[in-house]
Structure formats: structure tokens, C-alpha cells
Length: 476
Image 1 (cartoon, rainbow, N blue to C red):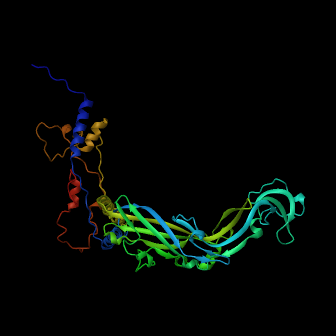
Image 2: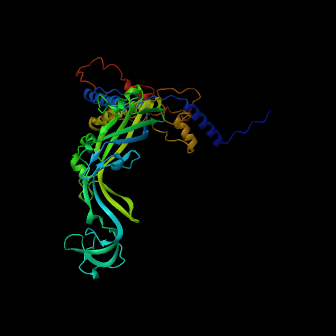
């Protein structure tokens, strides 16, 4: 006779059983148990929550936000500007080359509306401005020779000299003289400035969707020479009067021309590329950008100088200019249908509908759970065998139902005969259900059917069968 094959160790056999159990359990299908609660008020709350969630996703998420689209923000943009017009002051006529700074025609430029001119400045010595701190003096001892004030106009010579006008004295400085406050002359250029015209040429490009468009109508005639911007009739004629821009920004032109300020021209390109390109149009808005209500630093001004030579010596004219700075700001976003965001938002919407079930479960178990009737109907308890082996693979296999429960003796019913050859110690106990309260056998929201016997009294409840079903297959 062939020698008997040696039995594998107990641990290896247990591991094999566990592996087979896990592999078998992997292909099992599980479905949740559904409990129907006959309660009209709770049902109204449940459907109302579902309706609100559905309206939120249909109206706001998909219609307003258009979350079914793939989006791109911040288009690539270019801006070219051109100003035309002439004006005059008390002393001369000004054209574009003089009152527009810088002249390159970019997205940020300034239109000068008032100037303070300090003519014929030369390098020499003169009294310091009274606006400089510690510039006033009574004698030479109050002035330190060689001292340089970063907010002043030159290096102090150490002398205390009379000011340009009045009886006050200031320290003498070496620099461009006379200083600005001593001999400046103010000129207003804003008489004709409201009629200046500004051409703003803008083109945008969305690289993700390969979409480009400009704000000028594609016409070969002299349309731009005779049109003026209008939101209804001439949307693609981006020629604006300076007075129109200031008025739409909510400012007074005369006041703004004297103190200066910054006006923003905002061009917004919000494009739905699921529609024809003709529906993608620019939207213009205007507002003041600088803080006009800040007394410490209100308005807008800057300085520049014009240099020339007289009799071989360098001379300059210092100009402090007040003006209206125009900032052209372009932004926008484009969207086009895409399957991926559509699927993501649909899945989010379907998942969010489950919030209604969570809310109603909380209401049911918190405020309507008298005598814990609903708790017993909703939750099932699973008991593990008491005399399970100590090895954890065997225990896990028992829990998974892939191994028979261990034998345990119990006293058999004397009225029930045992099979031949079967001892009392070899009888295998069936799976024992967990003890449950008698309340779990009551029906949920059972209507009052009267005290007398009825058709329900003689029929066994399906719920009771779940307590004795060893596999838990009875349905509610």
C-alpha cells in the first residue's frame, strides 16, 4: 500500500479555507433592506427635501452656473488706444502730443487736464519751499550746511534767506531754482477735454477652445470715422468720449479735471461657445479706481520736465500735471459643453438626493421612535459564536459563514427521537439568532383595526419569520 500523504499543518489548512472563503465572498451580491414607513408627514418632508435639491441642481447648477461646460478664465488679450482732440489754456493751444502721456497708446495712459508750470529753472541757490519740514528759520544757526532732506529740493548751504514772498525766511538750498512752490503758474486744460475721443481696440483669444474675437466690426468702409459707441446700435464701435466715460463712472468732470483721478474701463468677455460666435459680445463698464475720499492722498498727478539751453546754460521747465488716467482692464471666461463635468455634476446631484433619506432617518429615530419600534425594525444584530476557536483565521471564516460552527452539547427534546448512531454530544446547533425585544415584532405605524378578531389576526407576520430564518433571507 502506498504511504498516506502527510496532512498539512492546521494553520495552512485554515489559511486555505480563509482564502477560499474570501474568494467566494468576493463574488457575492449584497442589496440593502428597504423599510417602508407609512407616515404622511414624514413622506412630505422627504419629498420636499428631494424637490429642493433637484431644483437647486437643475436651475442653479446646470442653468445658471452651466456646470455642464468646461471653462477657461482669463483670456489672452491685447489693447491699443488712440486719443484725438485739441484744447486750449490761458496761454496756448494743446494737441494730443502734449497732453497724452505716455504717447505709445497702451492699456494705461493719462490725459492732462491741469498743470502747474515752474518755468526757467536753472542750477543755482535759492530759498527752500516752506512745505519742507524744518525749512523755516530765523538765523543762519538754524540751517546746517550740507544737510540733505529727502523731501526737499536740494542741499542746504547753511544760510537763512528771505522767502519768495512774504516776511518768512527759509534755509537756502543748492539745486534747480526757483523751487516749484516759489514761481509756479497754474493752467487749466479741461475746457474742451470732455469732447476728446478715445479709440480702444481690443482682441481676445481663448487657447483651450481656439476662439478669437475683437471689439471692432469687420467692415471695409469708413465706419469708424463716423460712429460713436452706443450699447444698442454701435456696440462694435469702441470710440468713447472722455466726458461719457467720466459720466458713466459717476464722477463730476470739472472736479475730476482739477484734482485728477483714475478711471477704469472694464471690458468683460463672457462667452458661451455652445452658441454661435455672434452671441459672444463685449460688455463695457466704467468706475473710479482710486480712493477719492482719502484726504491724505486724493487725486492723481505726476511731474515731468522739458530741458533746453539758453546762452549755453541748461534750463528746464518743470510741469506738475493733474489728469485723468485711464486703465483698460480686460477679463472674462468661456465655456463649452464637456462630458466629464456633466457626469461629475450629475453624479453629485444623484448623491445629494440621499440627503433626504439621512434627514428623515434622523427625524424618525430621534423624534418619532416611541418605544424604539423603528430602531428594532431598521437595525439587525449579528451574534458571533460563543465557543469559537482561538485562531483568528478560523474565527474570520466562521463569521463569513465558510466554516461550520463548533459542536456544543445541549439537552435534546425527549419527545424528538435522535437518529440512529447519533450521540447527544454530536448534535450541531443551528445558527442562533440574537435575542430581540418583543417590540421588534410589532408592525410600523400599524393602523387601529379594532379590538375584535380580523383577517390580520390569523395570518402569521412576515417579520416574525426573520427571527427564525437562519440565513436572514426573509424580507420585510
